[in-house]
Image (cartoon, rainbow, N blue to C red; front, side):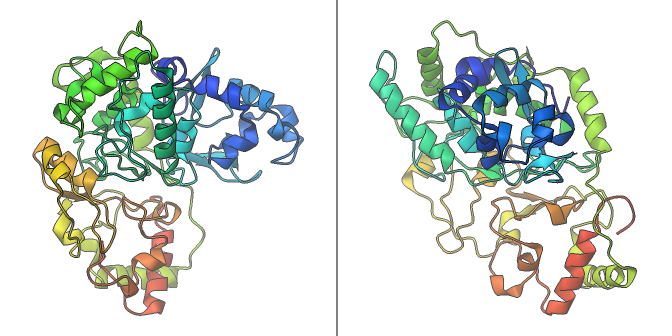
Length: 449
């Protein structure tokens, strides 16, 4: 399920967005895939790849890309005949690099921090099909996309929109993607997915009470947004919020999909309508996925001597880290209010933001980006804040915080960031910071840390 299931989303990624066509037209080589952070499973490489150094020989041949896909060697991209679909593993699995950078034994659960999700999507011949996740209202990251001009029957308008969409997608930082189809354009760090049992609620903001709800959202919305224009899928489009032009995001997206293919059957994902939940993929399959991820642990950490672990544990407790982060694989499930976690946050609220329902611009002083939190909290009438994450494998998941604004654990705990920076919980002495980082490096879920 985690590695190979698409629920039929190749109908979106290939038939609608045109990813397979883009691979063919652009002559995408295995090296090109590696360059945007896509990873290769070394255990499934064809024999000629095994005989070649990474980057040479078949890695330079665009015809070899299809052979890698057919061998299930491209992590997270699934071949379905002449189509390409997407699985969980694209973002939530990477290799140990034992053969070369991006090539080796797969390690499920780790976020692929090298993956340039937007650049990969931009290779699609009709990447504008990913419109709801882009910066449409002028408040998000990257170039603004304005699909106000109706592209129906106008090839030049469609080509112009395609160029704008590609530019917006390529602005997504490595290791980040937008998972909220609200027209804001807010890519956030890909999360690890270890030990997903008794650690809810889920997502950065705790939006989903159950892991299966989060998995379903990604399968039936993020990996196939055509569900958003169906009657029971519109709730996911920020309740059909007004955009900067006349009309709604649903209307703009429906028109765009119809322009791409007037005969398109929507939605394209294999899912059933399920009332307020919009669409639901197979409950039995989601249960199997839950069972796998509930037992999934990060790779064993490097050996750390017991005196250093004990010293780091003392710092962890003395600094008050255990007030939020339990010394166990579980979490409290608490959502820390935005103002408490980011005391220096002072965003501006523009006219467009008010019309959009309260979305905020970046804080001009810190650059901290809370739109995911604000919009999702408004949507569910919940607390605006961040869910306390578990710490399994935390040393392997840099950069830190939901917007990737802190590069290392050492930097996260340094008072040099300032008392009003996001997550302002520091360790003053450098030797104690080093002990704390060593302690966290040993936190892999196999033993009490």
